[in-house]
Length: 278
Image 1: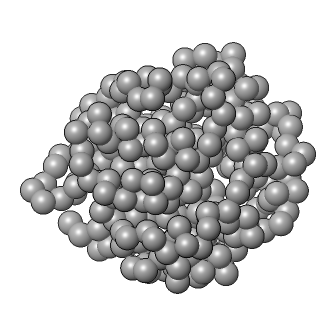
Image 2 (image 1 turned 180 degrees about the vertical axis):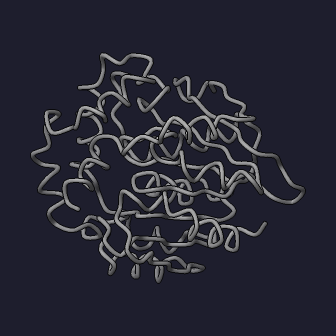
Image 3 (image 1 turned 60 degrees about the horizontal axis):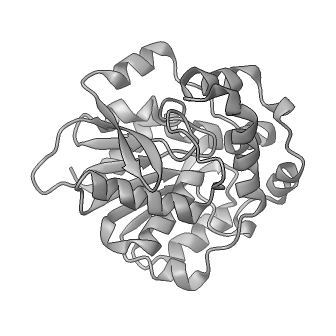
């Protein structure tokens, strides 16, 4: 569990199969948005329904759309419009060399993407680091968020098991399995930047700072806090997060690890659809 979880945060999660990727890309619109100096890659799936905002997906640390949401996204898009994008330096979105990866900047980039797409309000589903970014969007840009799903999300350092921070302090690119390196190089506009990508991803975790309790209490969007029963996130942290957010509910997936949370479609789809409303 520990090795797989570290790789998921510091490198790249397991890629979706070609068949799953092809299913995801069927009837898809894609493009690049000028966002805070980035050419941010995004995809739009499914169709809008009257009175229903789109669902915006925020991938985890080191992920691409495919590696994080390749299995879940097609199922979500059956009943609503779903938008997925790749953050600064991730996937098809080129990096800004002099700009570090930070959760706050990624939250501002996310809000800017919604503004570019002329979406005044969206539901957000963030996984792992993407959940931390989604929480920052809800704090920094509350009017942009209707409902919030925080999946396997750390908001404070003690929310993770201590071994995670110890592993981050000593992470080396040699520990990234070759399939993960291949996944990055397959889609990145500058595949030669793998080392920089790895270093900046790890550095964001090394410098992780707590979101204050007061800021979490100020999240006005109804929220679902979701973790695996064998997660990077400590169960106590998920409970505390659900209690801090005024309108929150808690879900713990049995028999699941951090790296498989977003693949539990049979359990997740009914939960998500009930929470968001279809």
